[in-house]
Length: 340
Image 1: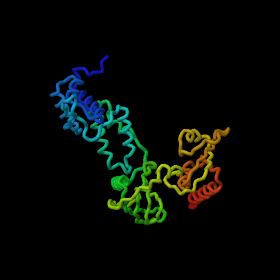
Image 2: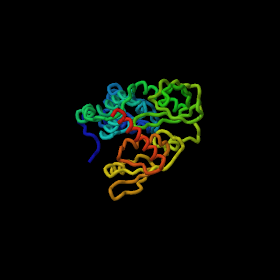
Image 3: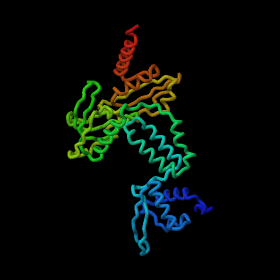
């Protein structure tokens, strides 16, 4: 059976197919009017009208160039801003949902524009919006996430840091230090960005401390770009290697092996989720509990995670961490009993 479209195909369907085809051909220089005319069995005059609709109605800018083919000069049409990936409805929906997950994050300020572009480009023209019903889909998905109090401000700082990271220029930051409750001023050479549970962190060389430091972006009070102060990104620095053993976002260089015993009623969850690349299931006990080991640094962050499990987890090793958790439990108990 021929894959060619039927002659009575609607103009909307033809526009959809033309966009898809130009998408695929843009990396290779584009397509000619004759190629489109032959492929979709309409006149070149009609193809010109279709291309006008793609540019003016669908707002997808086209670039017109010329090439010599078989000694003849031909006009080629391609998309001006890169090219759009050819996405199935399922993949477009997956992107749409993943964008919803970023509501309230540092990326929130850009999401509405991106979402509108996705809907207009993919949903509205590629697929029947009544069938996809993206607004209905959005209303039927509820995300339980933390949200920033001022995502637009944080998003602005985030954008400046991404630019500094890309262009290798320094930034001056005002940063709220949680443990001291003070705002400090630093000049930082950005090395990378880390995302942990939708919270973003800057990793960079702090000129004040002359060391690599991590800064939580929503604790920044200002970011000033020093575009004239370019730095050389260290050739021996690799962000993934630097963070490889960190439990969270802190690399304190003090790596050790942690052994935890999880109770039977949460063992299935621990076996189904990789919480750290070093995670190893050491033993499955007869009562259904399991012993899991991790080789990590930044144990301060891990303590918070351990507390979240309540009485479903027990620290077996090392002894000092077991004692730390015991003292922490005593302080929590004192807090709740002080008014009894």
